[in-house]
Image (cartoon, rainbow, N blue to C red; front, side, top):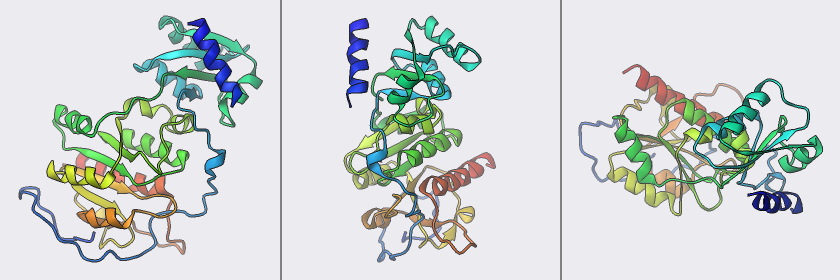
Amino acid sequence: MERKNARLEREIFSRNKNNTKRDFKEPRKGREYGETQNSQRYIDNKEGYDKKESPIREDLIIGRNAVMEGLKSDRTIECLYIAKGDVEGSIKAIINIAKEKKVVIKEVDRKKLDSMSEGLNHQGAIALVTPFKYCQVHDILAIAKEKNEDPFIIILDEIEDPHNLGSIIRTAELCGAHGIIIPKRRNVGITSTVYKCSVGAIEHMNIAKVTNINAVIDELKESGVWIYGADIAGVEYSYQVNFNGPCAIIIGSEGRGISKLTLKKCDKLVKIPMIGKINSLNASVAGGIMMYEVLKGRLSK
């Protein structure tokens, strides 16, 4: 184990148009879609995100809360790095859990943690872990069925900012979503930045990475799931829509919004009310608003 950790340690330092009222009592039928209206999406084009500056590691958990959740989960922790002399408060609790799980613990200089975290605030704790294990789409549906709940799924269309993905995962977990679906291409995966921004919520969220989002949408429709896209072209506002029943919410990318083909596959496009002069929202904020509308409807049933 020491030899394996030494090798891993060296690696760290070496580099809707259909807007009709839906009725869940009726079986799903084939739908026709009109032309998709070109419009500004719920995005923020000036977030200053630079993919070159983003850590791409998938084997590090950074920050106290994230490390704590990682230790509590079934994730395999290869090694825990703690800042020298920092053994009070939550760090002490982290060390105790790590000892119970027989995790290798190393006290290191803060400069070393700074280098490992690649600019993220590590708070004196970093865990080296096995890569994140993605689930399958059918696993998400099975979890909803097991809980005797209507599926509540988040579909992300090319979210490239790891901070947005982490925030969306955190909100999805809080709102009771059964899972998140992301594309394999042009979408950030589960990196150390995403993990930290989710504050450990990743350990409680099922995430599927798929080759073809639109094909998955068709499969979800066959399973009775209704597809809603957050888009300014929507006829109804988010607070007017009845999200009760099996549903999936699509959130578009930071720079382009929901792609045209995916827009056409939505059962309904839903707009978020805005009264200011700026008519765009950060992707994670738009997602949060939509998810809380779903939660509000389900709590009021």
